[in-house]
Image 1 (cartoon, rainbow, N blue to C red):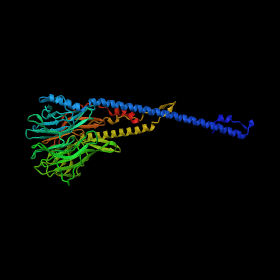
Image 2: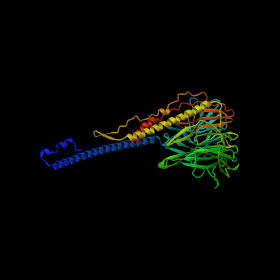
Image 3: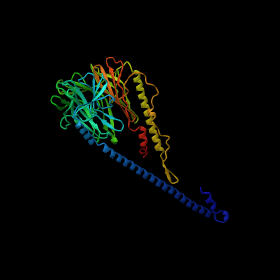
Length: 560
């Protein structure tokens, strides 16, 4: 193993030296050679350590720079996103309003969600929409005006009154046809422009249609009545006595896990007081939840509740959501403020149709014990990925037989199936793109190995593994069939007046983009012939960052 030049320096037997001297000389040279090789190896190791230390220091400095920039950005946003300042500004603006303002929205259709879509208690061909919010990707807007839609004239009107409740969304509302017509509003929340800060309400308001004015019936109270909350539901019952029933909801102060409720409260409209319903010890209660659906039966002594959503704080401070698909019935003694009340869980038969867990579904009672449901979103879990699948099916539920069934509309079925196929295709593209990005990230991490070239480090990683999101948004080349059918969505407003069902707005999420609908459809439940488009959906401008922008901007942090 000795180098050739070392062997050539060794004395030979012809030089007259003893063979043992030649062996000793070779061993000495070999020892010196080993020391030289060890020195070179140690020098390379020290050089590599210096390069690694330099890379680590550069990463540390870069990470601190990103952290400082993010802190400065949050500080600037906090100045512009002051919740108290925004509420104070709205209060001052409300104080300046000293008369009733009615504005005809002739040039625009409102884009809102998480508001209350109701039938007018005083006018036959008028629909109501109160409050709500809109997010365009950069800012949240919360509304506090009352919208009225004239079905015959096909126009929207906005009504603003002095001494009105603060703007809010995710509240609960109910109407009363007697005493000149009243709209009741309880709770809800107000969010800042960024959506990072919000405040829950626990006040109860009434809008009198005959007088065109608002009145606070009960302020937020820590002593009596339901606590401040959002995502709850409220129903009106004629009684006697006339009363409002509030169920469920959630509260989140951004300091811990959200708190969900399964309590029931009653507001006596004659005594103007709250009462918390007490259940017997043997009664099994539904799990705490929000965003469920409630149906009041004409019997005035029972209601039905379906579905809902809740989340629990799991490991690593992560909230894990749960969507319910259970059906419950709440019964009480007639003519009382929910005395002798009892919950019963129903077991719907799946003989005709199996209606699985779904959030954001819309429901309304069509009469004769028939419930109509539309849309919603289902979470599809594959491995460690959760994908949202939006629905556009129209189904019914028979309260007497406790059975789901599909409602067959004569026209538009081809378009409905086309929309469902497009949704399945979108989910598949999104799943495939997500899987490719995950594999590309693993490949990038595997190939990220700093090496020394002429005393400098090289961290270059080939970009041939990067995947674009364009495939996940590739439009379908197949033309949609003729017909009319609401596209897949969730949280749309649903109202039934007589035999006509009205469907308004809703939400749809495609990757990181949120689309808010402003269209309105009508369906004759007696004929079930075809959906009718009453108001076309206006353009929904999106000012948020695309997924590709976000992924490219966060690639550095992922590498770190």
